Amino acid sequence: MQQAVETLIISSEGQGLYEFTGALRQFVTAADVATGLVTAYVRHTSCSLLIQENADADVKTDLDGFFRRLVPEGMDWLAHTTEGPDDMPAHIRAALTQTSIGIPVLDGEPAFGTWQGIYLYEHRRRPHRREVILHIIGDR
Image 1 (cartoon, rainbow, N blue to C red):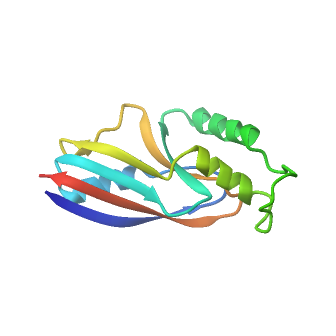
Image 2 (cartoon, rainbow, N blue to C red):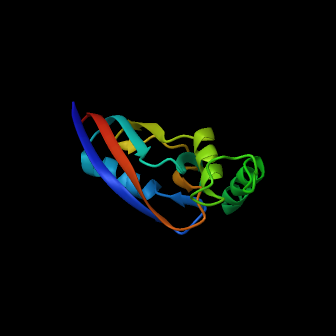
């Protein structure tokens, strides 16, 4: 059994989905694990992680639109407003999604489906530097 850990830095330019499937694949390849589990964990409370379709950009557009409607800015009943009008809605969106994703590793590759990719989902409007911890455990 072997393990490896890496911190991936993803610079966002504001709200949206930022794919890092390639970086995760490279991490798995470098770890030389044939069968195991790779975990991605984001160390922040106003962004999240998603596995989603990466073939049609309209999926990203529609997801952004859905979350803007589901958790809009400007809800006047929110108490946490000191960091700006997008901060508490970003925390709510992160609570509705996930901060950690586990992906099986089979034959030395993350077991993504044909159209799947992994994304950092930035919920804040301004740019951020986000840390995603990648951890793999398994056998050669």
